[in-house]
Image: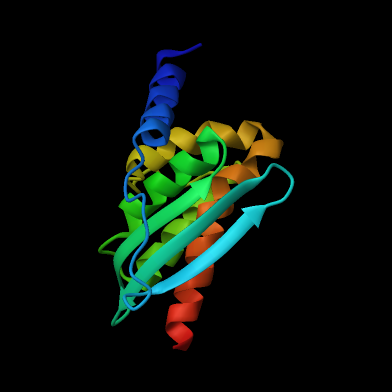
Length: 145
């Protein structure tokens, strides 16, 4: 195992054991998207507060494997403070990364890059993308309201 793989594993486990933004927003503050992955049992409840086209806050509750829960933690950290457009772009970049596509090296993905190895395990891709699918759905809902 390479030292980079070891680092990525530690980052993933850190987010799994000490998730960032775990919890939920008051219903009056935002919207909630509930998704699950029936093939493995992962579930997420994503609370989003989007104001004037900006992701002001994001929290999640859920149950699942280390990949899905750490991905949710990383996603909420990455999108808070970004415009809805930037958050959707990041979701598309993440999706491309999960499909093994080359991504622009100039884009700083921060901790999210630790999930790049998931692309080698097709059965785990849905685990990693669950929170991101919830984000995309939530931003669409926010844009409709």
